[in-house]
Image (cartoon, rainbow, N blue to C red):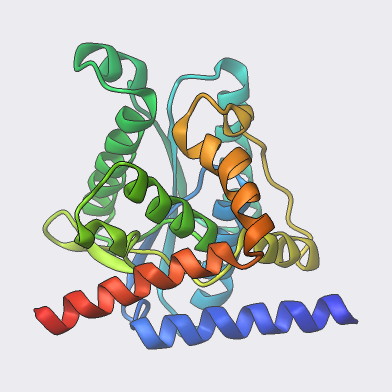
Length: 246
């Protein structure tokens, strides 16, 4: 019973965030980026439920990075099967992450991010979607703020992940899950009986973001158990200052 109460609170947070940020409307055509991981599966389920209530059109896109062999193939198959079971249109596209990283002397993380957003924008244009959604959540926000602090970015960079920003000329990129922690997403998935795929590379501390998540933030939490919320709060404050200045 307690878990169901938590789930109701989580749903209320999502709906309140959607209303406050004006993310989704009945007339929208929405493309969801679905990797098969916990956050993206929760995003897919939430958007499916919300589309039934609001009436917007929903599509799924899986971006195959071509980096993890058969495991990546199984991720793609998982997403396509999920969409089929839910009666929703989906597509998987493969992008040359390693080739771009080598050609331009970029890290795999950076190359993958660039190609993911390019694929998302291209598919949004193809399907005439005016919104594209990713599963970024509060933990991602905290990690982003901390990453920018460590890299000595300008103040504006501490605004972190925006709830909404342009994606190409005709679409907006939205992040409906930003108010939720990863722990809350796990409760959401459990209550709704959702399964997901685990990406082994997310446990590799050689990637800077993973190192922050696995090593640094747990240490900071020993001094402040709510450090994730505090870092996300900094991002909100910086965005608010930016809006006032604008």
